[in-house]
Length: 508
Image (cartoon, rainbow, N blue to C red):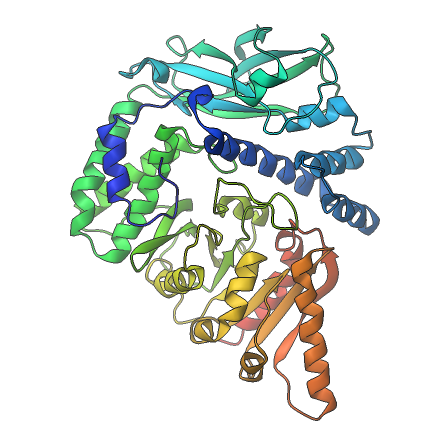
């Protein structure tokens, strides 16, 4: 299967087409595949914590920050579930924890009743448990599918293959026929019953979106074939943009887990539009608006990203965000897959940041997978003004956790291409590099109980020591004096980030 951000995509796309891009059932996949779906589910629960933290008191935020760094004893869902229970004013009992941990595959993302492959004609749902834990009772599952109008169109009770062993292998499954469903958007809801007892109002819910679209398989295969015949004639930038769009379609058809939510139908429409643009000698992204998942050239690899495409073609200032790597905790525990964290997750938290100011927004996937991240990120930043014009204004760069660690050590390479940088939860810089910063502005955000944030205090102490001996010091300071929960340092600092960006861009 192809992952976003791999090297040139041609060979992978050829493999997908050669195998007719047929989805494979979830239970037939290996542990790395299952871990990727499990990590999607964990990120989704973390997003719920972020949402429910909005408007809470400083005391509540501090309590949640403490919960999110507590030892999980091998169950990464436990800290998140306890934080959710606290925010909802209930106990994180065994039933709450199990319902927070259970996930579901929804394959394919786009049901095609006209597809040549039988598995594409059905909506296949598999319940799975990413980590072994104790069940509070015998489990059964109620599944309900609703359409965009909220009408129930299908339901079923699963009473077989509901053991923990079955759930760990995603062998608890059921299929809904797609032939009688009109084309459109649907949502499946999974309700977990313990000894026949239904979920309580405060329990975590489980639901995912999928689509029905007749002709999807044929359209997707035609588009991917056209990518193969078009890409080699393109210059590096349009080729990377096209490859990034094609990667989204390949991922969906290959059955890999998405990020945030499925956008499979729109991804296909964007790829078809890009191919039409290329045929008309336009930029692949011409006339596109909204968030577009694509990639930018970085030598023999690409840097995957999501670009907020504007409604006009005028130059605007730009803020570039580089997200942190996928992680189970604040230590070194990371999933086998995904090796890189998709920037869609961070973009979701940014919401309307910069919209009223008409700033361009670009979010970059994280370090990971042994890639030369500093090189790739720098190449992407240099390429961005050709896609999102800035009128010569250098972008503000915001780096979260591992991205901050990488860029901090090589910041001198970035200085000619950015107007300022914000390091969140990291960003150690060599002393010699600090001394050469001059008036270049650097801001830090510290994360609660996050080991990488120790560099913030050390850097500020270094500057204080320089001041004491009468030396001029660089423009380095805290963005604000709060310590935010380690997962949400960027997104909970948006007011201060906006003010800093206004300060920088106002100087242009």
